[in-house]
Image 1 (cartoon, rainbow, N blue to C red):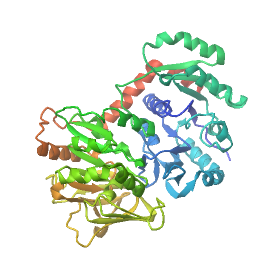
Image 2 (cartoon, rainbow, N blue to C red):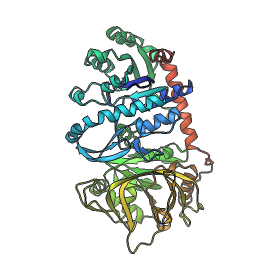
Image 3 (tube, one colour):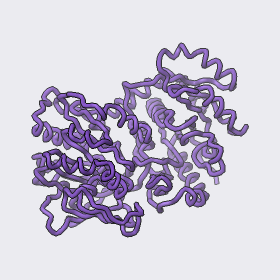
Image 4 (tube, rainbow, N blue to C red):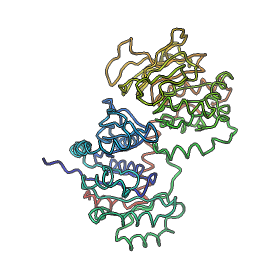
Length: 521
């Protein structure tokens, strides 16, 4: 069988968090700007941040960001395999957008052989529809102990016949050993695929690294096609746990006096979809902090308990750390608590997992702030939704419509017999189909809006809803947000970031030479 040969480019790394995903996003935007129909591809991704496509499939967030940069809707073919860790030893495996089960590492390696054709077919479908496919590897390209099972790095480069750029992070040190050593450890056939190096996250004047460029080129026989400076003026959504760890360490332990609304996000061990809060992180009315210590709770104007890939284990972690008692005390002290997906489940009274879908623990007590019980089911709900805010609601916002988001959850929540709560949202459509009225209610609120939760990821991305929520907090705290008119538009802001990223990379990479080696010039 013959396949259309889309042009390709692959970013391989010397390790995790060296900037492969961001550079792939940059080239998706650059190629879009230059008039090409381009798509991203990563054969296998391991992440707890995911997204639901318009067809209802689940995929990794990094490829969603890259698709946004390319100006196209995300599709599961762009990330045919997603691994979502459920413990230190195992992950939920998602193939072409659908969960196929929880696997230990050993079980997954045995199963992985069946996925070669899945990956190949997904890639070829993209290559048939797009002018260019920009591929991304995972972690280090030369983990020798994993070479036999490789599906995402050099094995994928061979399958796609892609020229590769090897990316190293100079900020962490050891750039010569990491780039030259990685090249040395490759087989000759794979070495021939490395078209050049990119030195990423350089601090200072890149011209000062010219002697280093010469050393890399002389010793490798390959060009350095970019020395990309470290940037802080651009914000691109990240899914790596390293990125979240940095957020927790930046300012969460110290209180900064501010007129902004301070919103805290609890750092759960199995936190998922913390990209839900990028819009709050960038909103000029908000100071967003991630924290994992009980004392930080009481500094916040509102606290959000985020999504979780293992709700029971994360609830037990909250109890052990003292955070659960701190959240209950915060509620008694008139604090505002919000739960998203797994965090919404934790606001309830009980969480049950009788079949061990997520955890080996069969039951846990929740925070007890909403009168509901959640039970894990075997079938995962993955839908894009269109919703409206129910009336009455705690935000005095009327029935805001349309609101957009997506659901990803195993749990089914039901209100207990003595429940005195109201639903927060009304789901109008799921995956483009009208929802029957008896299946339309989502979320709950109580205590005058001081406690509420929802299964809808991305709800804060809706500018009108986010503004109403912040106005609700401002009225409670007496903080004057008058200097900020609420005109921050998150989707427009994201487009600006992709353009800034493309400009930054164009300035510091030999883009024309890279396009020539791809066969585009």
